[in-house]
Image 1 (cartoon, helix red, strand yellow):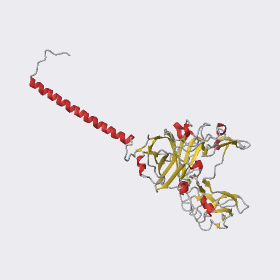
Image 2: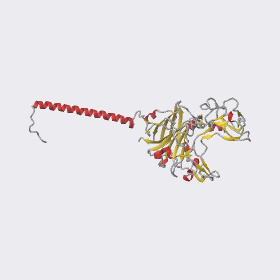
Image 3: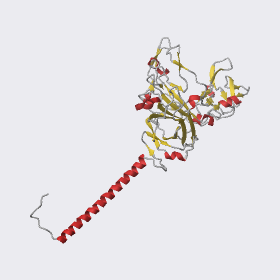
Image 4: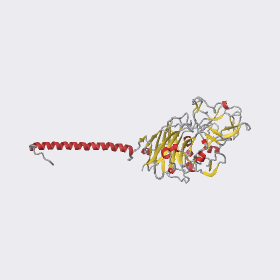
Length: 476
């Protein structure tokens, strides 16, 4: 250290004063720095705790990201459509499924429609649980019901018609009739991470919009427009996707129906089929069925699958001849006289509550199995009323579907759906690992992150809003 030999010495007392002043200033500065440090770290800690951590108490928070965190719980929620207090522990994920424009008119009239969905999840040692809250001003559970239109009851035809499952339009794009499809919620999962494209595309990994194709089922073959068509199938022999369907009219009809329909997707026979068939390629199947090793004997020689027992939503339709000998027309198969129900329970057909339709007259009269009749021209109970676009269907419309409880592999997912007046509360659960041996279910037991997509249908059986590229992660 160098010393300035020319520096004059200061008096001792003055030196002490200066030294004490400097020391005091240093202490004050040090205290300020420490205080500032603690203030900053406290703010950071509070921010991190609020955003990223679950530390007891009500840890519920909301995120608009793409990650759904499944909260680890020791208290299982009751799956009844009532939001138990334990759900307040789970982080809420806000998403907005949006109807896309595939470019071939498939979703015309719905492109850009958006639906608000809030998701939560929890898991325990056995099961994974989900809670979806959907904002929907219109409860749509009466799916394409039968009604009678006197103006359509002309020679060789019947006035018995079904409401459309989605909006219909005239040539100028004006709405002719609002859709009578079912409100539905679905989730898609990558089974055993077998579908590489699913990781980056989720739902879109198996979505194929069909182009025009040569229809070799006709002789000579006909080049066929394929606008307004599309379907799901994967791109490899070992690629499979798990598909969960909550048909909300069905689920909310009866406790025996409190199940999501568990389905899966495969590659529909591969390129030798899917590259030829246009709108015929379909990789969507109910759980429990598999290719049986044979194929159709006619073009395009699609693979045949084993048969699933009758269950789920079953068409309430049949073909009969007018007056027993005339033109063949479609009419309801079962009715519950005098009632207006969105589904006819299969138990109603067994108990005698529902009557089978065994004949139809040229005037539209239905003849029932107990020899009674329904004459839709007496009064207007079986006819539409009000505005032709948005008005109600018939006061005594007839259900277009029978409801049959799900069984076997299709019944893996317990679900309850309650309409609140402003939307749906949908609770559902599934075992982390099912007893599946056919590679038709996603396996959550490793607690590995899982990519998924979600879709919502609003008064439509076809057009739907899609939220792709979501990720489920488990709180460890």
